[in-house]
Length: 262
Image (cartoon, rainbow, N blue to C red; front, side, top):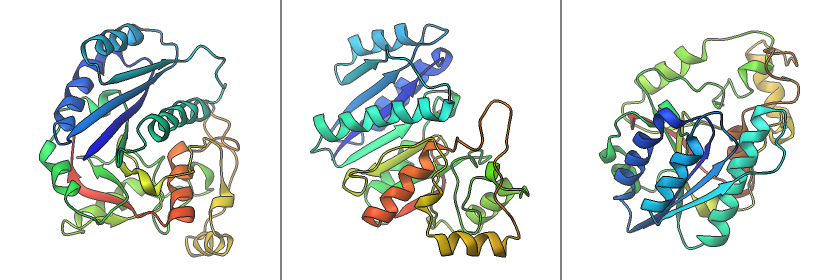
């Protein structure tokens, strides 16, 4: 088994050493692994730490972005992730897995390697993310009937409680969804061919009848006004489009494990 660890790095300096350590521990599960990092300009010494890591770990490939970046945060992250998977499918085409992970505090906590090891032996998923003591990433989460971003709905619902309750009652079984990330996801590369991250709101990826149905049963309506730091009409979590493209094109199985990896 071979795997590529991927991630976008910006202003992550306090956490990088621990994230690198976790990558090496998880990398021990594979016959071989590579690390692909995409760096936007930081306000701390993230790039210097990444560069140093690249010198002591020959598996690391670093792309330092010198081009102008989008004013939209989700588009900047989508661009970074897309550059990573472009390298995955060109330079590591024979690697059956890739991992996309955050390089901040989320993946800097001690890792339970045995959790991932268990799922590498199962053919029950094509994209797999994991639970946390407090499930935090409802921005990336699409799960029936709450499939549209919570930031694009008129009425808020308790998605934190909803997903926590589902995972608690799962009896250890994987939970299917349309999109989930929670800071770390492992993917079967064959199921994400010709898919890409998109930080814009992609309602066209939803079956229209289904979207109308879930809005009706949740008695909710779409809205296009959100937090001041985002243009909510324009932005959406980049993971949602990536997962839904894989489902639509390649029938990918997007799953959440109730177990905690970090």
